[in-house]
Length: 517
View 1 (cartoon, rainbow, N blue to C red):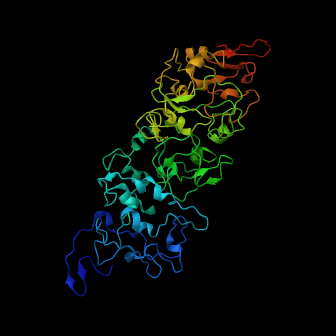
View 2 (spheres, helix red, strand yellow; view 1 turned 30 degrees about the vertical axis):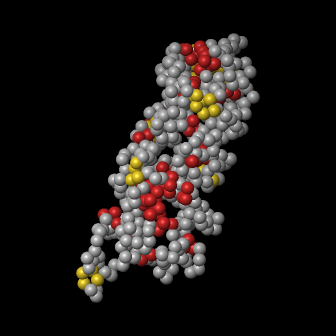
View 3 (cartoon, helix red, strand yellow; view 1 turned 30 degrees about the horizontal axis):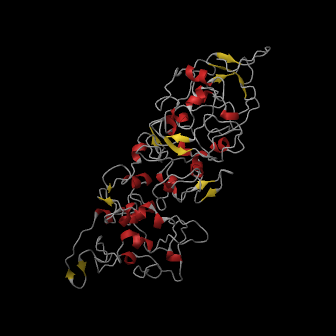
């Protein structure tokens, strides 16, 4: 800067008003400030703007001028007039409220060479429309509302805490200023971070950092930053809950992966599960994080047990209807017409032909089913990010006594079957409407997970027919005298050892015990 603030060469000192805000000082590292003397046309494809729209390059607003085709300090600042923006008196070239200065270059409507404009949904997004007032503690811009601050809610033109994309902090820190239940905005924004404080999705760490330019399939770099599941430039408030599998308004313009091959990038995702497949599909390096609790090992399983694509596939022998409509020809007498709300009694959303990932993986106090918390799998007091209580039967070794039986169980929303009871009438289960030994097993305290897989039959076994999601947890059941573990729906019978008791046919014996314990 050739002239220091408050000094001129010809006229000496001049009085000035205002102050240099701490958030606007350059510091010693200009990499944390908006770049100047940028080479144009721009070649950084994620930054789509109108600088490419004309030759020579120009902006969308004649007040915002380029200098020899470049962005310089006086593209945004007029050193001679302080109050062209009467609210933020930072010598701006125009009123910058509602992001107008930024949008002069960063155009939500422009698409270059068919590439995706991540600002495409900005005009109708929550951050562009929200009238919530802000206390600016912490500082999120000088205007009075979220909509007025617009871009500066999350970005800082100078001295940004996180240099990448001039964010006010890491992805989570930028969101934390408003979505932590504090008093920075009024009315209070949904408190998402109270959910993460439970057993939450794993944030990025020093070994799995997030970057906006990373591949959509998160190979060996699994994390769940806010922007992996939400596009802050397109996200809209959820004011109604549409039918599955369509993505919810809060995930508008987010990236997804095709269920067809687990690799094809979908921008934007159309269905909710497509966004989940960024991590829970074909991506490499998946691990079963012990903080989420016990994980069954299925007797019939595909090569990658953490890849949910084959588990939900339409070609699976049976599966919950997430990626395809319910297609079983078998009667389903326990299936409710409406899901139950969190209280376990009030009817909620109609069942329909599909369900969402978030019908099971959801905040335990989510708004969709009658709570007052954030929707979605941010975190839950129950393991595996489950919305409600669900127990997994466990044994010290396959076939041995199960260590966590729930005899004569509590069948309310507080009991071990609460999650299944959201969609399935336990009265019908106990009446043995679909299997003659359901009541016996439940009253003795066995969990559904002993005999049923939650997602679907991701693999096949010649000895397990697989209808009605019947699989077996190989950590809990074992072979019966060396015979293969089997299940036949046609004969309503199985061959295995569970809880120290042999079931079914053994070698050199014609005896078959149906459902015996």
